Amino acid sequence: MAEAVQRCGVKLRPHAKTHKLPEMAARQIAAGAIGITAAKISEAEVMASGGIRDIFIAYQLIAKSKLERAARLSLSGIRLIIGVDSLEGAKRISEAAEREGAELEVRLELETGLRRTGAAIDKAVQLAKQISGLNKIKLSGIFTYRGAMLGGASTLDVRAAGHEEGRLMADAAAALRSAGIAIQDVSVGSSPTAAFAAEVEGVTEVRPGTYIYQDRMQAAFGTCTFDNCAGAVFATIISRPSDDLVIIDGGSKTFATDIQPDNAPLFLKGFGHIVCDPDAVLERMNEEHGMIRVKPDAVYQVGDVIRIIPNHICSTVNLHSFVYIKESSGKLRKTAVAARGMLE
Image 1 (tube, rainbow, N blue to C red):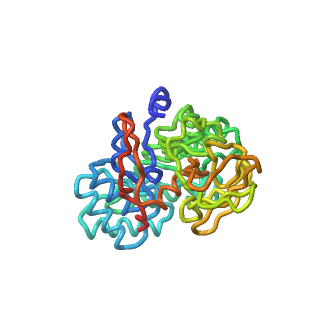
Image 2 (image 1 turned 45 degrees about the vertical axis):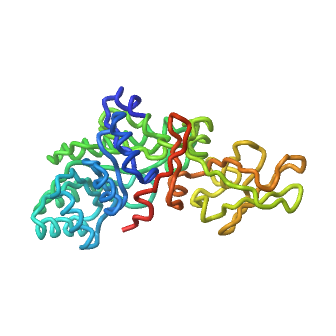
Image 3 (image 1 turned 90 degrees about the vertical axis):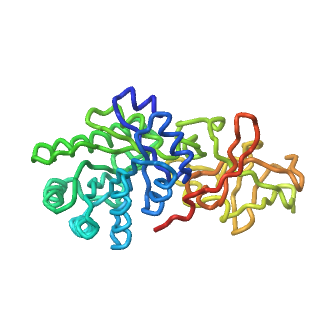
C-alpha cells in the first residue's frame, strides 16, 4: 500500500482501528507511512505510549474531558490532529486549547455520500472561515470517509469509487484555497479505494485500515485473495448434531456482525469464509455458538480446529484480548490487543 500511494506522491496514514497495536503501527511507519489514524482519544493515547508520534483522530471530540486530554497529548510533543465538522465543535476545541495552553491542529470533515458525520461540501467555505478565526486552532486540512460508493450507491467498481471520492475532495480543497483558506492536507480513502483515490491530483493523504490484515470483505472487493488474509479466527468444532450441521465454539462474541450477509454490493454468504471448505456457510450465531451448514458428506469431527476468515477483521479484533502473531520461525507469539475496548 505504501509503495502504491508513494508512486502518486501521496502520503499514507493507516487507520489503527484494525490492529489496535502500536507494534503494527510501527511496522506500517517503517514501511513508509507518515503516521497513523485513530478514532478515539484513548486509542491515540495507547499509540502515543507505544512510541507513535504523529496521530490523526478522524473523529469529533466534543466532551470537555476528552478535549483536555487531547490538548495534553499535543503538549507532550505528539503531532495530534483532530477532526471537526461543526462550529460548535470547533469552539469547544478552541476553549479546551486555551484552558490547557495549547494550540490544536484540526481537519474539517466533509460529507461525501455516506450520510454519517461531516459538513456539507457547499457549506465548507463558510465553516472553514469561521473555524480559522477561532483562537488556538490551526485548520490544516480536510478529510472524508466514503468507502466503496459511486454515484451515491455501494459499488464493486472500487477504481471509479476512489477516483470520484478524490475528485470531490480535491475540488472542495480548490474552492477553499480560492477563498483564501490555506488547506494543505486532503485526506481520503478506505482499503478498497485508497490506491485509486491516490491517483487523483490534489489528494495528499489516504487512510486505509483493513489492508494490514485483510478480510473476507476485501477479498470480495478484489483487493486481495484469501491467501493474502493474515487475520483469521481458529475455532474448534464442539458438536455435529446432524450430517449437514457442525457447531463451533465461536459466536457473536467471536465474529463481528457489522457486515451482515446477503447485503449489496458484496452479497457475502454467512459471517466468514471457512478456509478448508468454501462450500460451508457460517450461517447462524448466538453469543457462544456458531452454526455452520455443511454438505452431508463433508468430513468433520468433534475436536477439529478450522480456520475462518471473518467478514470484517477490524471489529473482530476488538472482540479479542489477544492475537497470535506468527514469527518468521513459525512460532506463535501471544500479544495483547493494546487498544482493545478504547471507546472514549
